[in-house]
Length: 417
Image 1 (cartoon, rainbow, N blue to C red):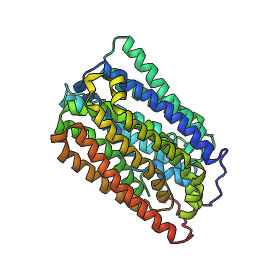
Image 2: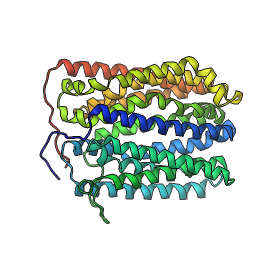
Image 3: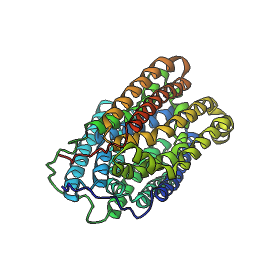
Image 4: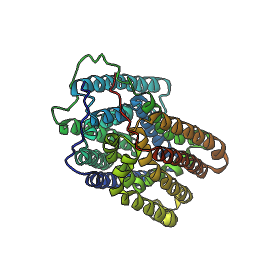
């Protein structure tokens, strides 16, 4: 464990790194959208809704098990407060626990619910968590260009395997979860390989460190983020699998809209952590502000042309998805603005406020899904997401403005226990 703080010296500026991340994330999301379009065309809304629900459960579980550790570790690495030995003890401990939980999920669901399609969630969870965890050292060192390579390999492997499985006669449902899982696992291996040896998580056979130590607030925020994906399983429960299929068929399409903002926020995290003040953090973000602005323009464009986009890509079977896509485009606008604010606040030790805000709005979102989906179906789930994101954005803006006005008080980050 190192405790000395040192200025961050990345090989590329925040703007360059954000461009790398935006480009790779954009292409990755396009590839994922292609996978979902092919899957939708090869199945009915009910079948698609079931397997997407399983993938959503796996994604949510990955966030729960991670419990904010990835974000915390990246911040500590950026501030030179976490060395390879300590990181390794925590990384391997977390992945071991995830593997045990994932295996237990698969066995229990196969025995208790042999005809269900939820058992792949355990495999999806382990693969996704490994992928995200092996990017931590690269993100903490502000090596966005290498993270970009990992992101691209993830989706490239996924789509090639997906198409290969389909051509071999494998069902769409099986090909979807297998390709996504293998893509994540391949990216995890690459992320570990690309990490410089001196900062690579040191492997330990018997990790004794508590991986989640010091991650409470980051964890609550991470759980809240992950819990947002429960809207799809909840929609399946209260609105039926058809509504889930109509919603799930286009819900992934909104990710490319916010890719610029996501890349910008991700690249800005180590810079904000080093800034020490809200004024310094916001100043470090100015050069890349064109990215979230461009993302908002893209989201509004999708809002305007949603009916034609859905008809062109999915056909008349998914006609009801057009209204859903329009609402989700507006959700993206709010999310695009919120992401950099969340990163700035977390980096300056306001992670408790972020956790409370995210947790409250997710509870609101799921409550609204329960209330609106029975009558409005997929559109009800989309409107629930929009209401929650609007509330979150208002809370974040108020907090950032208050911190900015409070002056240039520097915030020191304590090392991990």
